[in-house]
Amino acid sequence: MGKLDRFAKETFAEETSRVTGGAAAWEDAPEVRLERVQADGYLRVLRPEGLAFLAAPWPEVRAHEEALVELKLAGDHVDVREVKRALLRRQAREVERVEAREPPWMGEEPLWFVAPHVPSWLHGVRVLEPVAAGCYRVGPAAFQFLWIAANELPLRDELVPFLVARSGRALDEFARWVAPRREVEWVLSMIQYMPMSAWTREDLKRRFGRSDDPEIEARRQEILQTLLADSPEVKEQFIEQGIEQGIEQGIEQGIKKGIEQGIEQGIEQGQQQGRLTEARAALRRVLARRGLALSAALEAQIDGCSELATLGRWHDQAVTAASAQEALA
Image 1 (cartoon, one colour):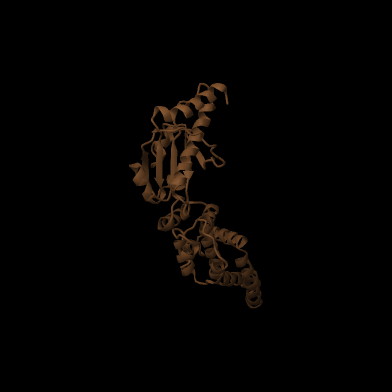
Image 2: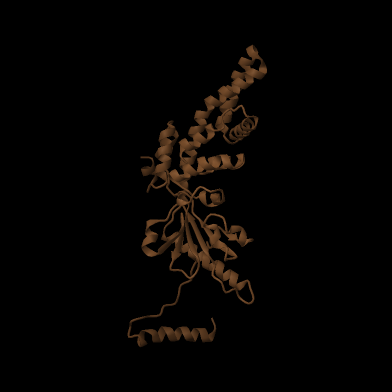
């Protein structure tokens, strides 16, 4: 600390109380810990004209070089602390851009906050101006502050990056809509990672049933092979039951036909266990992301549940429950 800086602060400390008659006082500022100031990412604008005719919020970023994006998914907390941290990260990025240029950059860094919905508390402390369906300009602010409520956005191909933040029924609706519009690998990842309901996940898998269309059948086989590779329990059932029954039937009907039938029977018998395993894993992922700890008794309760409907109900309750016990009620 320089001598002039120290003198100025000491003057503030000594004089403030006196000159204000005790109405104000000076305190030395504590050091602020800033271990976590990394944002989720940035939207860089490469061709502004290419965004003009896309669905909102895309056109809103045309006047900027970039926008900082905060992405909150289903089950994530969206409270005042998270918003304040996002504002801090926005300010840090703005300072970074100012210091990276000479002469200094004079702009304001936009902030786009993507979440399933607009929390009720935000309406009480900020002014929200609707820009388009699911898009709100948050004020007062000296910079562009957009809140993007994924559950309210229309189902449009150009909005898929924002729609992945949906939750609950809106997420199920999105999953059913987007599945036939994307490649197999992406759909498989969506089914595996996104916390959709168990019955929606099962419905998506059933869509890939056997078809007379060679292209659709090839796609089904690809998905089936990936599921077997990623699900050890299903694969074990397939090996123990499918191949064994296939060999037995192959003795009578021919090896090729027997193996095919054995595979189908093995998959049918293994699917139920696989569905239960996936439903339990999805439930645990939501609880873990929300920080809801499971006791040994609750772990046993999940492992002992053999009803997909019950696991699906617990999964949906876990999105908003205050505790793991409440989620499994």
